[in-house]
Figure 1 (cartoon, helix red, strand yellow):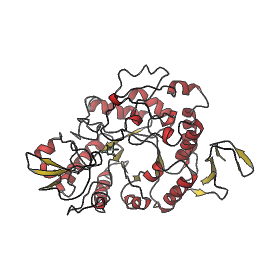
Figure 2: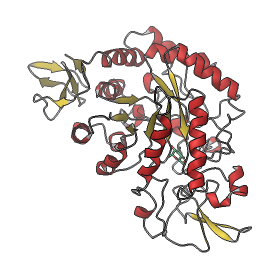
Figure 3: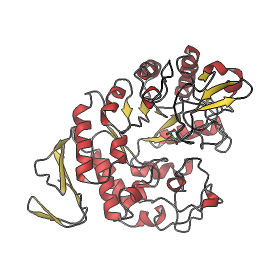
Figure 4: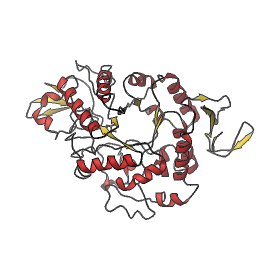
Length: 423
Ligand code: GLC
């Protein structure tokens, strides 16, 4: 990672969000944490982490970590030593289902002769956030990393920490509980002990935009999943953007992304491999007001990679490994020796794109520079928008995207398929 910080700096990136770096049996690739205060030996040591933070800062980049507070690994010492930190029941109390197995979210523990809750894999028992000791533990974990220079946290399953106390039937009692916001109010108090205050960004996974609103109370950033999950069409995206910009409280920023380690990449899902369409996707993402998150590879148009069945590592169905294949830095992929997932297609790679002024990489760089020149953080759909061309005002400039694969007439000019302009 340290070797590639210059690449991120040359893009104009402000912060680097790392997926979990902690010791983990890797049943769910780091999202089953066995020790929140250590670094997985595959990645290095705490000293290596400190060096990464220092070096990143030298490039003007802050490091953000992924905090997984909803569940631990069943190999975390707490699961043996502090069973009261988890959610137990004498019998299967309700119809809650595991996201990964599709079966009951309750697993029988033969030693304790009770069932424990696991919203995800059986090896990922859910913590009991009604237990004040769990809250105290996490205050300590936050401070541990903030003391070590972490300037932001991406909070895994941010909508799912609190479960209904009575364990009633129905998904609405498993997730999106209103009491979860108390936890983030408290974490903001912890964060406020630091200057600058670290950013709290939620993986606020919801399909309904209305459900996002309460998360803006105490999270600095709430990731906009309806945006990411929409088709790349004007009719789907425009209402999402307009709703978000209209509803956002004054002191909050929108948070846009179109790829991550759980979703088919934007170059595949949005653009179906079409370079111009992918460039239009990047344009939208990077010219909207607020925070934009790029997933590694978005900047070169990396598509989901082929992974043969015998190389699949992910426990989820459908597999998320296709969007987790390695980053091609060079034409021949020589930098990867025995990568965890195969590197098959290097046709889009950093080396080639560095040299090409029209590359996706240089387009991404250009857009990141441009976004820094908007005079304010406002958004307004321009009246010149028609059913094919999306025009919106950003401060004193107007952004224009031909959202179709055909030439379109807009304001007396002809736009090429997926052409984007800043005027
Ligand atoms: C989040 C992560 C995902 C993980 C799950 C369980 O959705 O992004 O990768 O599998 O939480 O921790």
